[in-house]
Image (tube, rainbow, N blue to C red; front, top):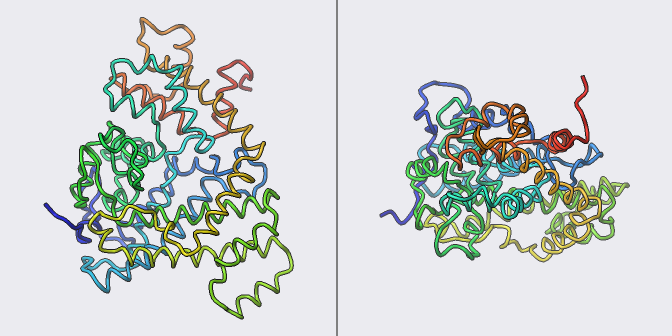
Amino acid sequence: MATKMEWKDLLLSDRLGRGASTSAEVRSQYQRDFDRIVFSTAFRRLQDKTQVFPLAESDYVRTRLTHSIEVSSVGRSLGTLIGGMVREHEQSNGVAPQEFGNIVAAACLAHDIGNPPFGHSGEQAIRAWFESRGCAFLETLTPAETQDLLKFEGNAQGFRVLTRLQNSQNAGGLQLTYAVLGAYTKYPKQSVVPGMEKSKKVSEKKFGIYQAELPHFREIADKLGLLPKRNDAWVRHPLTFLVEAADDICYRVIDFEDGCRLGRVSFSEAEPLLRPIAFPKAEKEATNSYDSIEDTKGKIEYLRARAINTLIYGAADTFRDNYERIMRGEFEDDLISHSPFLPQLRKIKEQSVSQVYATPSVVHIEAAGFEVLGGLLGRIVPALVGDEGTRTAQDDKVRQLIPPQFRAGNTKYEKLLAATDFVSGMTDSFAVTLYRRLSGIELPSG
C-alpha cells in the first residue's frame, strides 16, 4: 500500500461521470471547472444567502456569494505559490503552477455551495428539527443514514450539489475534475466512523459525504490516490489545506472588516489587531501610504488588504514546512494555526464572536431562522415521505408546490434527502416567503 500521495494522481483532470476529456480548448480543464461553478444556479443563489449578517440591508456587507469569490481569489494565490514549490521539487506531470491555483480557486468558489439559508444557524436548525419533531421519520433508516440527517452538514450537502443535484441529468452532476472535487472535500469521511466520534483532527471534526454519494467519493479517492484511514474515511487532498486556509483568512479578516464597517467594532479596537499583521516588517513606503489615508474606512480597507497578503505567504510557508507530512497524510492542523500572528487572529475571532456574530439583530434573525426552516421541514417532509394513503389533503397541496426533481426519491432516505435538498437550496428571502405562504401569513399576489 502506498505511503505517500503523488501529484501525478492528485492533479487528475478526468471528470466524474465522464472520464477523460478529448476536446482541445484554450481553457484548461480546471478553468472549465471554475466556469461551470460560476454559471450554476446553486452558486448564483449564494447572492441571497447569509455570510454574517442575515438579510442585511447594506449593499456593502458581504453575502455568501461575495465571500466565496474573495475566498477563491485568496485560494488562487495560495495554490499558485505551492504550485511553484512543487514544480521545483517534485514531478507534477507537467502541470504549471497557475493550474494549481486554478484547482484551488475552483474548489474555494464552491466551498459554501451547500450551505442552507441563515448561515451556520441554518445547519443547526435542520439538525434540531430532525432531533425533535422529525425523529419519527428516521425510523427504519440505517445508522449512517440517520446520522446524515441528524448531523446535517453543509460540506456534505455541497458535495451532493456538485456531484448529483446540479445538472442532475448528467452522471456526476457538474462533472467536475477529480482534482477539484478532491480539493473541495475538507472532511473526506462518512457520518459514522467508529473511533472518530470525538476526534480533534482537522479532517475529522465533521463529515463531508452522505451515504448517497459514497460511491462517488470512493471513485474520486481511488483515482486521486488518497490514502485510506478506515471505514470510508481518507486523508485530505493536499490542496484542501489551501482551500481551508483561504476560507480561514477571509472569514477572520474580512468578517472583522464588515463588523467595523457597520460600527460593531471601533477603529481603535481594530487597528491594533490588524496593523501588526499588515506591517510585519518596517516598510516605510507602505506605512507612509497608510498614514496618508485620512478616513478610517480607507485605513481599515488598506489594513485588510495587506493583512490578507501577509497571511497568504504565511500559510504557504507552513505548507512548505510540513510538506512531507502532508503528502503522507500525517499533518492534521489547519495552516493558520501555525501563523506567527495567531494571538492577533485569536483576538480578532473573540471580538467577532462577541461584537459581530452575537449582536442582537443577528441573533434575532438567526433565531427566526430556526422557526422558518423548522416550519418548512414540518410541511415538506410529510408531503414527500408520505404515500397516497397516508398524506393529508394539505400534504398533497404542499407536494404540488415542490419542484418535480425533489419528488423523485424511491426510498425513505432518498425522500428525506430530497426534503433537505429543497430547503437547504433556498435563499434566505425565498425561505421566509415560502414559510409565510405555507403558514397562511401571506398570500401570493397575482
